[in-house]
Amino acid sequence: MNVLKEYYPLYTEDYFIADLWGGRAGARSYAMSQRALYNLLHKENSRAFFLRQTHATIYTSCWQDLKDRIAEYEEQHGVSLNGVISYSDNKSGENYAENLLNGNTLGTKGFKVSSGNQTASLKSLAGATDLYIEEYDEVEKEDFNKLLLSLRKKGAVLQILRAFNPPEKDHHVWGDYKLTKVTNDVLVEIVLKHSTKSRDEIVKIVDQNNKPYYMAVPRRANHLSINNTFINNYENLNETAIEQYEKFLEDDFHYFCTTILGLIPDKGGHSCYNDYDDIENHKDREIKSHEVLHIGMDFNITNMSAVIHVHEGDSDYAVAELTGLFDTFQMCEVIKERWGGKHQIVIYPDASGQNRKTSGKSDFDIIRSYGYTIRTGVANPAVRDRINEVNTGFRTKKYFVNRFNCPVYSEALKKLKYKNGEPDKTSGYDHVTDAGGYYISKKGKTIKMNTGR
Image (cartoon, rainbow, N blue to C red; front, side):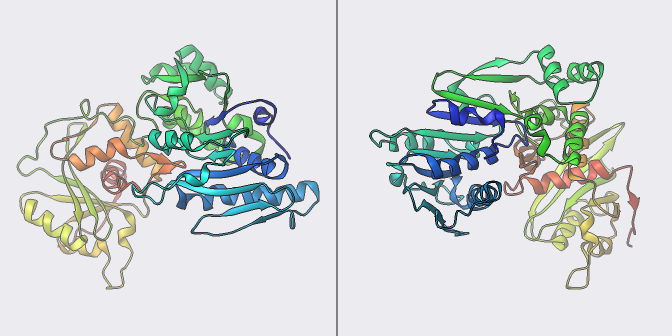
C-alpha cells in the first residue's frame, strides 16, 4: 500500500485515539480508508465501523473511499480481493464488509438516525475494536462520550481514528489538547512554506490581519495527532487547485489560514462572512423619503429573499429585508405595497432569473412588469468573488447592516459556513446572504437592463 510518510505513525505507533486534521487536501479521508482496509486484511480479530454524525452521509464518503482503496490495492499488488473481501453496496442504508478468510468485519453507523435529533442505538458497537470517525468536528460531545462507554470488549486493542477540519478553539475536541497562540513571526514562516510569494509580501499580509490563530498538542501520551496540509500531498494535486490556494491567500487570508493551512481560529471558524461583526458593522440607518432603494434578490419558490439597501457617500447600508416569500409575484407585490410610488426601485437579482419558465414568463419579466429597474450581468459573479467583496465591505467599514431591521440577514451572515470548500446550502442561511451579496457584487459593474414601464 502506498502510504504517505506523514501517516506512517498510524501503523508504527501505539495509540488509543489518532486525530487526522489540518488544512484542505491533506489526504485525511484517503489515509483513514486506507487504514481501514489494512486492518480488514491484516489485523487480528478486528471488528470495525465507519461513523459520522448522520448515517446517510457515509455511503458517498467513507464507503465509496473504501471501495476505491480496494480497487487501488488490487491494481498495485496485481491481485484480486474477490473471494477475500465480501461487501454490500447499499446506497441508502447500513453497509457491511467481511474478510472471508480471517473473519474481520467493517460496518457503518451514524450517531444520529438522520438529520433530525433521533439518536441511533450504539449497542452494536459494544464489541468494536476499531472506529473511523469522519468529520469529527460535526459530532456532539455527548454522543462521543456515549460511544466511549459502549466500547467494552475485553482483551481487545481499541483504536479510534478521528478526521476533521479544525473547528473554533472553544469546540469540545480541543479539550483533549493544549492550545498555543500563533505569533505573527511563526505565522509568516508557516505561510512561506505554502506560498511562492516573497517574505516581504507575506509579512505585509500577516501584519494587516487582526485575527488570532492557535496550534494544538495532545495532552495524553496515547493520543496521536497528525496535522497535514496540501504540502504533504502536493504530488497528488492538480496544479489548478494549488494555484487556487494561492488566490485564497490574496483574497481571503482568514479562509486561507483556517481552511488551507488548518490553523485553529479563535472565532469565525469556517464562516463565509468572517469579517462581519453585528456590532461593528451595525448602523441604525432607516429608509429616508424618496431615496433610491437598491434591492438584492434571490429566487427560490416558497423561499424568496431580498435585502433592501441604500447608498450614501461611499457606504452601503442594508436597511430592510424580505424573507420566506412564496414567489416573484408576491415579492414584487410586497415591494410595491411598502415602497412603490415613493422610491425609485432598482433590483439586483440572481442572473438565472432571466431564464424563461414553463409559464412563459421569466422572473425578470415579472419584475419588469412592475416597472422596476433591473441591473445584472449575463451571469452571476463567482461565489467566492461575491463573498470576498461582501467581506471587504465589512472589513473596510463601507458596508453596514441594521441588525434590528434585518435580523434574518444578520443571523445568516454570522452562521453560514463553508462545507467542502463551498457555502453550506443545507443550512438554509445561503438564500438571504446570496440576495445581499448580489447587490454588493453587482453595483457599479453591471449592465442596466430593461426598466419596464
